[in-house]
Image 1 (cartoon, helix red, strand yellow):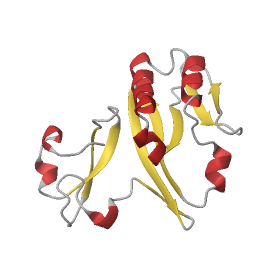
Image 2 (cartoon, helix red, strand yellow):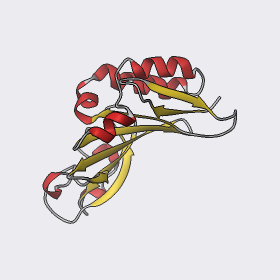
Image 3 (cartoon, helix red, strand yellow):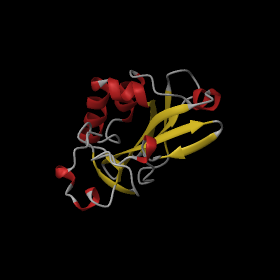
Image 4 (tube, one colour):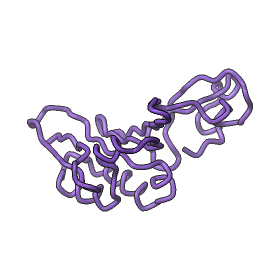
Length: 160
């Protein structure tokens, strides 16, 4: 039964709601970027949820996600600066979106610091492309220079 994993109002708790068997609503959860990148158990859990299908057992999915203490809506609203990853499962694929908020302005999938290529780290004109992450298999945006965008994803030196 497809469900929507919404950010809960209680600290560290998410709410799972179901809107019909064929609603097609994606599931979503948000973690601090530093927390997610340093926690290999959390990364493995996201892979497991993707592999098992988050819709097959929503209660177990909720319990697993809650054990890693995702950010809630209230926490997101109260934080003046946010550096987080949002995860959605769309048609069985895990999609990771980088969200950064500073001084009241939010950006999704911002370019890397100093606008350097994610692969070769040279400065230059960058374009956003998508590839599967080596960390968790999620579809993630990468910022590449004109030279690196021509390379196959497995030839790029990126570990996202």
